[in-house]
Amino acid sequence: MRNVILSNVIRENVGEGMAHQLYVLQTLLLNLNEDLMRKPVDIHEPQQIVHRDIEELRRIAFDVDGDANSNTVRRPQNTAKDYKKLGFENSNAPAEDFLTAPPGALALHVMLYFARQHGENYVKVVLENSTRADEHDCPFVQASKRLTLILCDILKIGEPPDDDGQIYYTMFFSHDHPFEEFFCICIQLLNKTWREMRATAHDFKKVLDVVQEQITRVLNQFPTSFEAFRSKIHALTYSEINKLWEKERLEKEGQGAQLRPIIDLRNQIKPEIMELIKQQRLNYLISGTRFAKYNVRSGRIRDKFWFWRLAPNHKALHYGDCGESEILPLEQLPNKLPLADIQKLQVGQECPHINIKAKRSAANSKLAFSLKFENEETDPICFLASSDSEFDMWTDGLNHLLNCEMTSGQVNKDLETLLSMEIKMRILDTEGIPIPPEPPELPPPPDNYDFAYLNL
Image 1 (cartoon, rainbow, N blue to C red):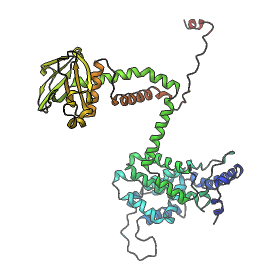
Image 2: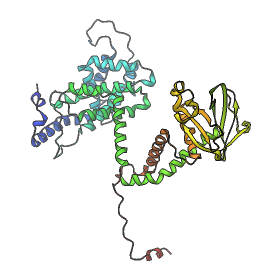
Image 3: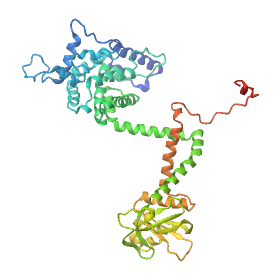
Image 4: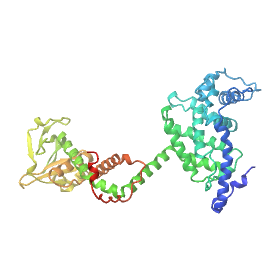
């Protein structure tokens, strides 16, 4: 079989000179497809070969038996309907779908090869799409045309060999029809990725972008055979691509965060973000929360609740008894606790209502907080938050009001999220422009400033 020996060449043992020669040979072999790629189909051919080829695509996909001499009973044919199911834009004159070049006649050529040489897989792809709901249908013909363009771009079909090129793939030397076999694997991949993404017609470009990424990443692994390529690319699912993209994005952001200009920008806007977080905590306290009622001596008071709000002027906390599902406005809260009377905020095991029944309350200690007063004779007021988020909001807000540091883990998470978003927004105009590790030096001042008077 042609060029089988070349497919067994071990890449590590190939010198630069031989690698370049193999690259040139691969380029010339693949460029044999250039004429078909640049040539629209001739819909006026006297022998109507194109029409026969298109009809063969339809017949293999939808007829019970592809043999013209068979006595098998066939279903009544509706060719225009079948062409529509295949994904032709013009089901009454399907040859017109191949008038645009590229991909031109090459798209029809590889589709027909897939149907003839891999009929079972071809029928599976076509029938799977023709039975989907219309919004989730992946039109085979349109997908094949776009995929052909992508493959031509990836393999640089139509471009002359580069003088320094050394990248080659041994699998292209192992088959008499390498581009056609490559297409057959990739069109099945496209169908699989479409299904994994639950795509609709509006997602066509997104699916093609993912498929191009899948193909490129597997080619970068230099598979030695089409079987190896098939195995690797079917393992690289849409989910895996998403994970790789997310990982690379985080790595890129992490590298960018170490640059001096980014560090300076981060330090510059960090106080603004912290003020935003503090204001958000205070707004939460102003909106109020219903707590189960606790006593410093006896612990939880059964079926008793009270509602707490921060005054809009941030000077006092207002509170009052309420029902289990009641939310009280500020004017209905009869009691007032000036913040100036509070000595400190206690959390967790420091709280007296947790220490009363330590064994039973240990599980809830991480949600407990209490307010201790300057007057030692006044009992602390005790709280138990209903969730981690509620605990973080109240303890952060109270710490800020008492001029203490906000210590919850949520503060750091919010800070990092908002800083990241703000930095991205501020450097949006520099997308694609490399940021230098150090800011450039300021130029020296001019000898004089006479130019300021030129436009007067």
